[in-house]
Structure formats: C-alpha cells, structure tokens
Length: 164
Image (cartoon, rainbow, N blue to C red; front, side, top):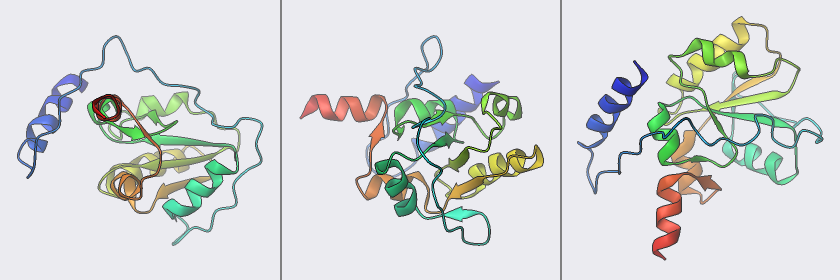
C-alpha cells in the first residue's frame, strides 16, 4: 500500500550520503492548496523539447507571470510532505486513480519527480492516454528546481525556515 511504499523510499533514502532526511508521515491527508494555480490567468506558452519536456526556467517564469497551470508531484506522498514545489499537488505515479482529480479542461499540467523523468513521465503518459491536451514533464526535475532556489514548500522547508 502507499504507506509501505513510503517506508521503502524513506529507507532507501537513508542510504544516501549526508544527513538522512526526516521521515514525514501524512497526518489525515495532505494539506494541498487549489489544484489549478492562477485559475484566472492566461495559459503559459511553453517550448517543449521532444514534445514532452519543459525547462524549469519556463515554468518558474510562467508562475511569476500568473499563468494558469497545474503542478503535479509524481513522487511518493512522503517526499511531497517533506518538500515540494510550491503549489504542487501530490499524484503518485503508481496511483493512476489519483489522476482523476486533475481537471481535463485544457489547463497545462506539468508533472515532476526527482528522477528527473521516470515517475513524472508515467503520470504524463497516463494523462495523454486519457486525452489531456496540454501536458509536460519538468525537464530538470525537482532537485534542480530546489538547487536554483525556486519556491519550495513542505515540512522540511518549514523546519529549515524555523531554524533560521
């Protein structure tokens, strides 16, 4: 189940170098904001590589411009709880039923993971199979997004901010 998958991911991450990330358990579901960001904004104008991949800089610029879009974190929920791109919703790549909550109304949907393409590619493949007209994978993934200092949210971000 989802909790067991989150446990395995946390265990595998504990093998990485540096201090291990804190395991964050969802408490009664995730505290997500709205699914559609900037619902009154215009559609973004993305330039896709290979008809699939959008650069992080273009997504960041579109968010700054108040463009209408949906950000989907395709990683396991415990990773989303720990830290995620601000405004993203959690739709784990292995839960195809979770895609049902994403409106199919022409809004751009940008999925990301840390791979940087595998899990998000699974979500985008499912969206395209269901006929969503505007989908993309965040080309560099969440790790590059974070490295560039772009907006992040989650328990790890909040605890780092509180420690300052």
